[in-house]
Image 1 (cartoon, rainbow, N blue to C red):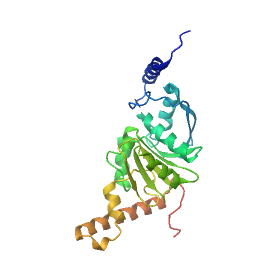
Image 2: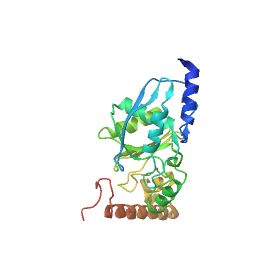
Image 3: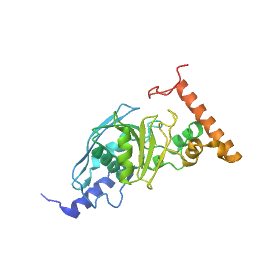
Image 4: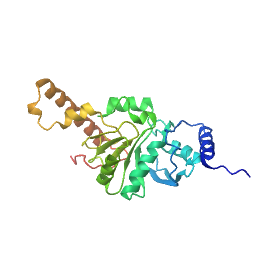
Length: 246
């Protein structure tokens, strides 16, 4: 029997990951600093599927688990798998650990270009080059302490953190460190924020803006209201908070 230890074990694990045939994004620290066993307990809000198991051990990411997570986090609109950034899983696991969250509900993860373009045409705040396209972003919700989750994620300065309090979810990504808040209702539940539109909608004193900016803000608000009305007419799988009773 051959015992594989240290760097040799990490190299063998890397080869096994590459052999899975899925596109797995391995950051420079994916194997550099083994952290022992890391577990995730996840439920997909749209498919009802669950993942409950180790995705890391002392030698790095576990190939079978990463392969399963690639399927679990697929674009459910198109039923297509895409790349998966292991650093994103670490970000999520770290946030859950420091906030005492046992499980998370996934609202959106990988997104195909076609799905992203369709959402950009019909929904408010979809980024053209969303981190979801590259398997680096996830939108999650928790049963409690959601604001604590958002604050903990910000404190880590790991990547992108989007805060959607009315839609009750947090966006996490393994991209550049940045943060935003989009306090809309429902229409933004699956989307990462577009900073320009967010700024237009959230400007506190629109009457003090130049006329062209006032018009731009008015257009953005009108777009938001149309999206909310459209969602409330066909709420889909998510809950109905925020939709007018009539």
